[in-house]
Amino acid sequence: MEQLKILMVDDEARMRKLVKDFLTVKGFIVLEAENGKQAVDLFFKDKDITLIILDVMMPKMDGWEVCKTIRQYSKVPIIMLTARGEERDELQGFDLGVDEYISKPFSPKILVARVEAILRRSQVSVTEATEVGGIRLDKAAHQVTVDGKPIELSFKEFELLTYFIENQGIALSREKILNHVWNYDYFGDARTIDTHVKKLRSKMGEKGDYIKTIWGMGYKFEVTA
Image (cartoon, rainbow, N blue to C red; front, side, top):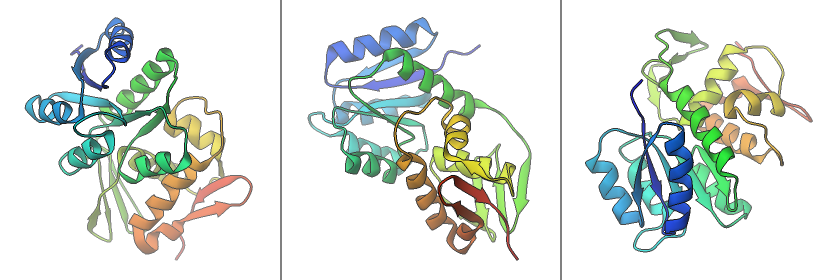
């Protein structure tokens, strides 16, 4: 099996080494960058990076700027690390297309588990495309069109829409959505899902109404005439 490359970006050498050691044991190739500018240069130089672990607070170019720059050209999965636990930082990360958000301090084992979960999903090769209610979802091409017009979705938004479409008409609790789309046990409130659903609805336009809110429980995807 081909070894996958992960870019670890953090200005703390000890943090880079800790994460690199855990990922290397799992068979990943880990590239390191100590600041945002170096990360961007390395990403565009090496075309085979499959995932980025990105710290927020860094010299020369912070994590937000790195994410903005890379998102202009690539949908590579990004896990954002931050010492802050404030809600607005997490929401900003999702707005920029961050796929996972982990606050320091964190368990390296949990980080590795999330890396593996994201890569399992992004590496799955499924050829079929699904059409429903004017929405066409192509898993192989990782593309979605609404009434023939392509829409830009982040990795997690795409996974969320896929899960909704594959479970049409079924009431899905937030817990079930987290377990299937995020693929890890989630301890905390549900703003992660609610934030993604809000952005997904917005990008889908009128078709966003297909995602129904079930108050006190979760969501249901239902195509209406």
